Amino acid sequence: MSISGWFDERLSLDRFKAKFLGKPFPVHTTFFLGEVALFCFVVLVITGLYLALNYEPSAEKIGGTSGAGGLPAAYASTLFIDANPFGALLRRIHHWSAHLMIAAVVLHMLRVFFTASYRRPRELNWLLGLGLLGATIGASFAGYLLPYDQFSVTATAIAYGIARSVPWVGPTVADVLFAGRFPSPSTVPRFYAYHVVFAPAVLAALMSAHLLVLLKQKHTEPAASARRDEASARQIAGIPFWPQQILLMLVLFLMVLAAAATLSAFLPVHPSEYFGPPGPATPEVKPDWYLLWVYGALRLIPGNLSVRVFGATIGSEAIGAMLVPGLISLVILLVPWLDRSRSSLHYAEDPRSSPTRLAAGMVMLTLFGALSLAGFNVELGLSVPALWVITLVAPAAVGVASYLLAARSAPPSPDGGPAGAH
Amino acid sequence: MDRRRFADLSLKTGIVAAVASAIPGIATLRGRSRSATSQEVAVGDRLVFALGQNAGQAVTEGSFAQNEAVLAFPEGKSENHDNLVLVCKLDPSAVKSPTDMAGSTHGIVVYSAVCTHLGCTVRFSEEPMDMAPFPHIHCPCHSALFDPHRGALVMGGPAPRALPQLPVRLSDKGEVLVSGPFTAPIGVAS
Image (cartoon, rainbow over all chains, first blue to last red; front, side, top):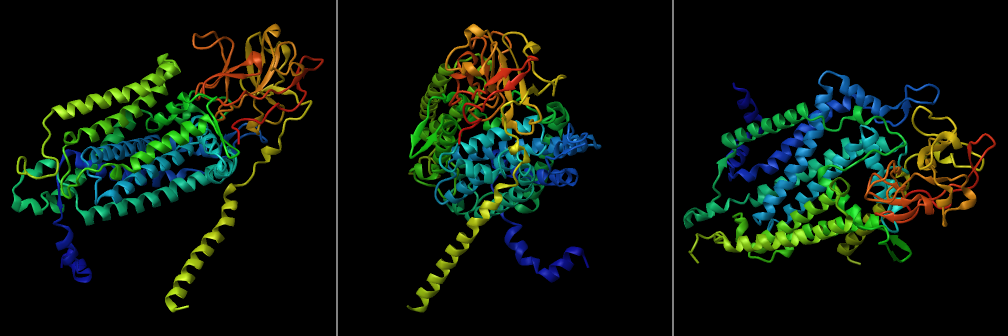
């Protein structure tokens, strides 16, 4: 008896196979971004399992003479991991996969936005997706401290300062999140727990929910499919899960792995040896690309801009790193409810079909770009007032231009019917 | 009370009790405290180099030239990061109010090196630049600017308040000694 037959007999897999193996997967180049994020997560888990075997989550100094000198145990163990055969490569693959995962999530989100796939009834998956983006960034942030080099410690110290700046509850919240006033000896074990226990659990739970909702609601089809005849409009067109889709996924996974390995081989991301152990002086730090916009906002808000409300001071750091990003996140969160256009249950829209949506998306993207640019004011020799002008004018200009361009190009019928059939 | 309402009320009471019982647990999440927090600056502490080949040796009046600065700690208290200070040597005639004049001597003014914006270590300008007057103190993290001649007042950038000053005097041997507490709370305001 074959092995699959043995399992079939005991678990009656026939019904399961009949239900799921034939599931159609609509095909479009941009429909694989979510899968890319998932595969990055798989690579992160596998490489993370290896790193956890030799990493020591402690900030205690080791190797010094009678209390003087020595290295924090976490930093020393990072050097040890890097010194093992392929250790540095695996650590870089882990770091690069995190970058790729965030990039894939962001691109996936842009695809969903510009094709209006977030609309009723898919609001829930928009929210779950945003939760996944937040959890991914949170996981990356917690992992950032773990090598415990000068760069990591500075970045986390800044985040601690931001958490402390929250009005009223800031100091308490910061001390609870960072396990005491940073740098506290409890912070590294706490962040280790966040990074290797909480983050993967939360991410796995959110991913499962995201995929279950997708399974229940069905994937949107590319707008081009909408031109099919009436009879087939009730069916979802796509390739079956088995064998085509599973093969595509396997190829995609290997491509993600190859991309992460190639990047790691040539670009030494986060070289802890070069940054050195934590010390009194602060190096020139910039956050990773996905947080540059918050960093830029922090530079743009002047220090004398602070508001006193009910005995608490809302200072420039709270405005730059909490209020501005919070408001932007809120707008993104509310996108499915702000878009009042008629919803199509089955089809992803052509991005040009709604000039307003396209312009809104471009305004947001340009705003992120302009704020990130503000993070380089010293390097670019741009003054803060000049950057304020760029931050306000560039998004508006790009918004108007993209609205006009979208309105000029002939948009296909917006809600999925054959063109001209209404 | 019918059974449905009783069951409903029990459930809600249970939820409230469960949530309330978790609140004291949050207090345990603050981590263990550092012994280092007991290392507070005291009058008479000698300032020693924090970095470089002289690390641990006393900072003296002759350690540096005018318009230079060094990072220093009160001797033996380097584990508390809040103790990190910037010892600046300035043109004595240029030092003006609101600098604590009694706490500065021979153009030596000592400021907390912990930025009041988000806690990075500030730097003393090494050479004249076009972006800011010379000399100045700046923060490499978010470009806060402070004026060392005038009590480290904010000259630009996102910092909300001046760097606290640490009053000092010189010993007979020219060493820099602490003569009073910091003039304001260190680092990020809370």
